[in-house]
Image 1: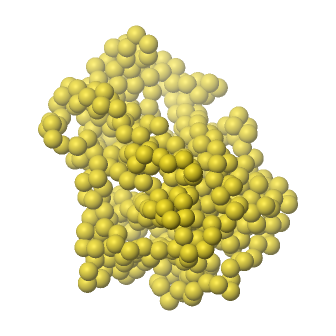
Image 2: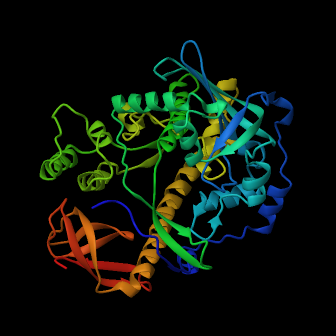
Image 3: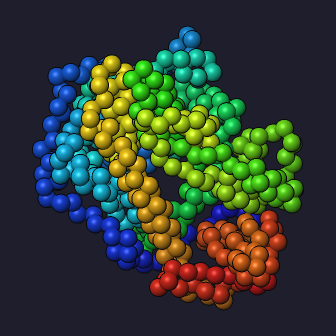
Length: 478
């Protein structure tokens, strides 16, 4: 089955999802006023780096721009300059804005609107790294060797000025045409070397089709379900953020002189039983997997547009479980408890403070460590509550995203009950659960009664599509 789809649309109202999860897009007046009147409390202490020709890379139309990058090829490797919006400079730690952000945890992205972590006047205005605007930033400088491995890294408060707002498709097209933006001309080489370094560390990356709900501009109030293509440019740019988060974690973990202080994103290694189960599935769908090849490298070498890859990557999601936010403190943790197994190293969130609460705290820790100054007490006191807020909001964000996709799937298919569809069986059923299938046209994930064989391309019949319950179900044979 080829992974393509005809684009169909239908009217969908996402208001019920917002109500179900208690998402309030309007911000309290006091917090909004603080955001509107926010001033940079470190304005007199910043270094001026508006000479660096930064660019941002984000989805089209994005206004909450957390990161700006400049990447230089040097005689000994690469130098990364990565500017991050400096929220710690404009949010009063004990104010109404900080309290509301703590309660929200992160920005929730829905097809028809955004429920922001911070008021848009701040996150899409005065703090956003918009082009041709001078902005306060936490500026990372990471010097890497020829293999793109970091050798020296630090972060300071600076003023920066982005030159252009780019998107992933445009970056990919420019790279393919041999005309990359000068500020990121080295990105393909750097990103490729970082990806290879990750595989050597044991990184496990999944490239499942990404379902997205987008507006049908041709029909008012209608929405489409599409497969979002992931470009190499997405992967290259992701490596900049991952590298920065790994450097931040090293700063938190390695500064034993003043005691370990930090907030890490951690994940335990997958159990051997899960890897052995994946090996059996690989054999069943005809994928050769030598005994000495790590699981991450096997997955990376698959063609993501094949049924076998869909099956294996779907099952491999079971390897990436147990993600947590781990607070570093007085209790000494073993090295394995500090690692994120999917990244192959300790890792901390510091690159998206406009959209994620944890990043403001992590950035302040790294700034203090690099400057040799005490970590602010509000940061230390806020680490455990921030970890709790991130855990709670992550769970809600996942449910909200799934609910929006389920609602769109069931709405698009409501008039096609009884129809037949081509599908790939991602996971065969057992006595406790039905099989899981992927239908490419339109792109939906669903449950299927009967006993379709795992990895097979089959013909199934739609038996349920109910927008009220957001449920769809198929049966095999059709």
